[in-house]
Image 1 (cartoon, one colour):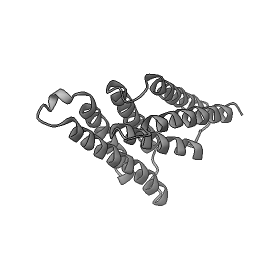
Image 2 (cartoon, rainbow, N blue to C red):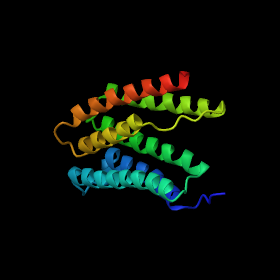
Image 3 (cartoon, rainbow, N blue to C red):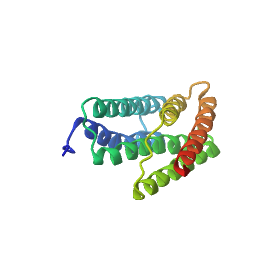
Length: 177
């Protein structure tokens, strides 16, 4: 039996802690009246990049050193969803992310999470696909660009929407087989 106290689970738990902190920096700027908003963006972006790196390493370490646990199977996607939720909602509140794009992405995320739970309850497992991993990467890049208010952030957001919806279609197709 694998111990739940391992590096991948600790990294996923760290992401769970970083997400609300990043969200706070994006939406509660009045808590930091003496800090220029651009510095809050830099710090939020730093936290987001740090959390994104933990996402890569927790999966890599879990597979490479056979540290995959049931807790990790739950914690990792939960941490990913909390991080992207914090990013997209914070950016929407800052009016840097289109509300329709955020709605479409989050609706797909909740729907596919529900589909995966349904699959597990019927004895199936829907593993993350390559397209699902690409979707996560594009979403993370879009969030990073939007936090920093860089050019092409909106374009990357809509690219993330397209990939997100298409990967959702692929999951549904696999589930129905």
